[in-house]
Length: 312
Image 1 (cartoon, one colour):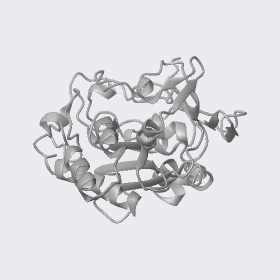
Image 2 (spheres, one colour):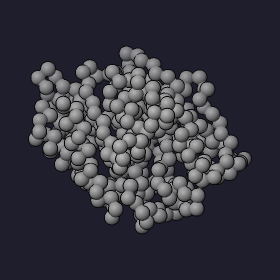
Image 3 (cartoon, rainbow, N blue to C red):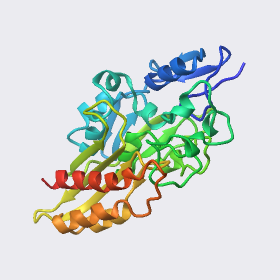
Image 4 (spheres, rainbow, N blue to C red):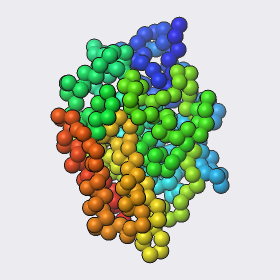
């Protein structure tokens, strides 16, 4: 009898002999429904210490089982970028159940992966049918064999905080160490089969931090982002930006931290020229697919939106 850990790398759970771990279960439940899988589910929600927020002088530690709704509610003052991003996800019902760890390690939202009668790299196949098929919601930065963007909004914002991740086997991993660069198309992250994400640690809060989050979507709310962006800034008494974190999601195999634009914004007054230059530079290096060219302009517009919001 095999064991599959859904908080680490897994293929599609495809039979009654499979065991899967569940945190909030919002993504697992949907995949079981669409694929018809009937695995045995091992619930992690009662594990001591799996959920909760612990504040110390060295920073803030968040259990992997902490709900998205808790992040949005309890971290709004100290970590506004994280709270705003959490509050923008899904629906109130999903946020009340979905967890930090589950959002970081969720599987791709690609319809080929989730269809019970197709295979792809991530479900045990040897190709990406979306590349030559329908990929309207695919990447605008085509840098990996799989052309669907990474689905984690929380991973995107955690990049801007330089957060670290602990697992049952390792500690102090950067978010990039967990997600990789997408070059292995079989995987959505790089944790081992028997490795479970346990907590995320943020640096101490930055006094006076302001933040903005925005997702461009195809309907008013409760939709996966076509493009999303988050920015966090600290400004001195004269209005000069002394530090900046800026990242985008929904456009690449992993969320992208825009280091060059952070450097551009830092030291500026965040005036119109700076905002325009940063927005124009947000799509640098884009290589859209035939159906995702619209995302290039949307990246620029979404970055402009968060910068205008954060300065206002």
